[in-house]
Length: 166
Ligand SMILES: [Cu+2]
Image (cartoon, rainbow, N blue to C red; front, side, top):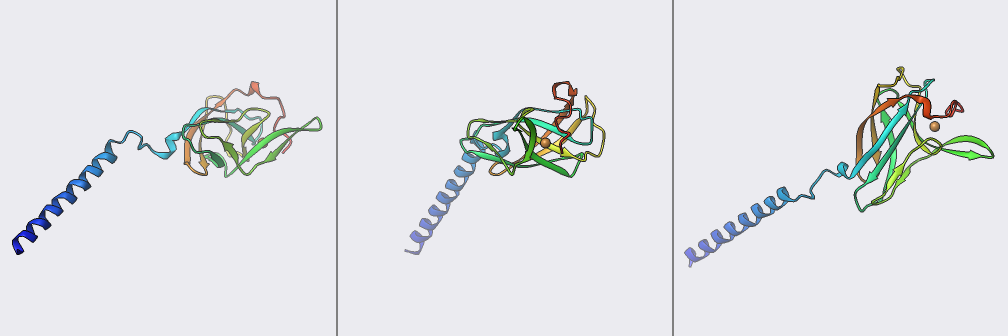
């Protein structure tokens, strides 16, 4: 009687170990087990070389997940003051407003471009020239942070004084 119980207990123990190791193997081999951050891709990013201490970064993100997200904030290695802005026309005058977040739809893109959304780098602490890069971190509500080295490009594409209204 005693002996039978002991065998039963041993068999149970082995069964549990097999289940546990099978589970561990499954997790390791799961091809979808990627880092959350990989689901947000930087499609393009650039900073027009600024004539002043204020620079704008234009970044396009793609959301490879089926969960909508929002860009909440950004940081950069050239200033402590980074804001999310939206340019809009107000009675023929170009103005910029500070926005709290920018939507990134599930399976879609968040598009920043001159005349639209951008990330404002205020009181930049070093001169930015074409060929430089700025290390930036973007924080999303659901997918966490995305790091990217944003290149500084020639400023020809941007209207002069476009960010002088600050
Ligand atoms: Cu701005």
